[in-house]
Image (cartoon, rainbow, N blue to C red; front, side, top):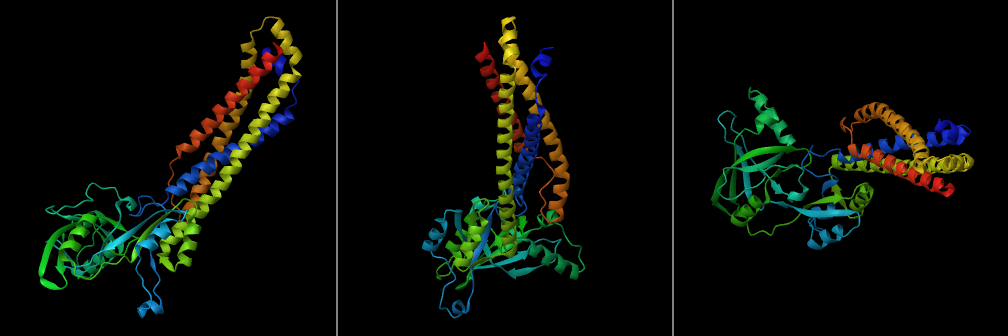
Length: 394
């Protein structure tokens, strides 16, 4: 009865326009937040490098081949790169300064031996979280992360030998051994057991813990000065284009796969940031239009409101009638917008997957939290405006 009295003479054109704006804004708000989060998560856990992280080195030119220019990094150069506003962190990639050979040490696997190149990176850059990634003198084995190409090579070798190929899990059970040797003293050497704890497509060398590298360089290194020929750069979200410009200006290069992933995440992330900004504006404007419509409705029903108050109707009942009316409208629009988001998600997930961007099917709950927050803010604004309008007539 009360709703018929208060809402019978309303012009619903403005209400419908505001509902359409709110519906579109909510749909794009949830969609943009969800995919912005999923795109930024893309690649996490797939390899050892953290998000937006690349390994770079100086380009080899004719002058560097003739020793007219250097390909190593000085501490001053590293600090200059780190000082850039779009760079989060820069760390050197430390290489071995001693002779290392790598061999199988398992009766179930054919004997295989090769001289290798090992490296270590700062643990903060590793996306592999394992309690095994540590080493001290006397430990039973050295944990290592191998290039995936090594497993391909090992399987090729085993296939040629008529032996069944092995999976990642089986490879991690194979026993290996490092031989450390001083290049200037062939009698000074040591054998250390080793085990694989992971694989990577991003690094071409064997990765070992920093403590093991320090031990080898202290005990078995030659007198040759150690040089930093590679560094790891972590760029800020959605600013990978600036990182790429920096590489070009300074004559640096990285693996093409790392550049493609970083460029893709930056472009798509920027696109969704733009959509997110437009969505927030659309939701805000449509919310303002609904609040304005609430105020207009209160002014049109000023006579009815004053009459009801004089008849003894509690002001809070009238406040609830007006505020709940618009809260239900916004809730209906939010529910429809969320439903359309799930329809969009089915098509967008397939589109990203066909484009090689595997972002998973789970929901980014922060998008739902943003929708709930928008709903609560609108509910609060509706209640406060209804309360103000009713008490102005009280």
